[in-house]
Length: 369
Image (cartoon, rainbow, N blue to C red):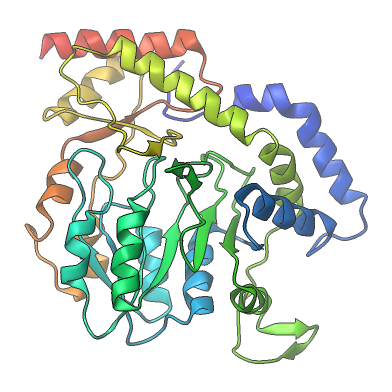
């Protein structure tokens, strides 16, 4: 049987009764859209973070898009972010008519290099969009200092950092708003698409609720800016309510998997994940690095192990973003990393025997290079 970087079936077997009860609860509730499950999840997700409000939306991309719109980012604005991210981060910036501006990342953590941010600020910059990548936080204290010095908004991309902390403070609680994805692979994942925006600003909260519902506050009446149909489905909301109660358990499981990798792969020449000082890593992905990455991935196929690369193409090198005018070499750390990084299987229900298979195969392949 092939081993992949993610699998949900073992977790589903363990949680099947609760998941089915969640579905039955919604189907018998009499309200399938914007009902009690959605409201309950929003309240509990906000409470977990100590935030004032959470607004459920249909996916993580729209969480970023609506979050940007709600804080006032639009055409003509520049948003500083990174190219070492999933394309949806940048797609969302483009979707509101703003221009993404990229800075490079640290070579050890692959997180936004804050020292480059101030130099990227122009008269058109309105927002900084840090990506809390792979399960750990950007240096938000330093980034907030830059934002405050220039009068800029901060919107966090927390799609990969549910429950991650920096200096004890949760990801998603540092800026004007924060966008989360609940895609099935996430640390807190639904059984389909889903997302949310976190904020403690009541005006941003009100704007988000209008934007996800066509621009309406009352049915059939668009009160201000036309919005979208971007609501979080009740079935996913109720499942997420149940899974939110287990979020800390999931994180504990991911950290246990990470420890097993660190012990099993030490001394192999493989560069293992580095946790920035002050960070509590939740290991959404377990990203390793080697200059012969492609040979390693190919060799592992003989062991029925199929690995992933997050991400093989920096966003600024994609033809779909050629209009931004970046050339190869513009972000050297990002571009070099993209040639060498790859992800090992990482999820809390990973069978230790399967993980041992991966570790053993990697040790064999690396020894033969």
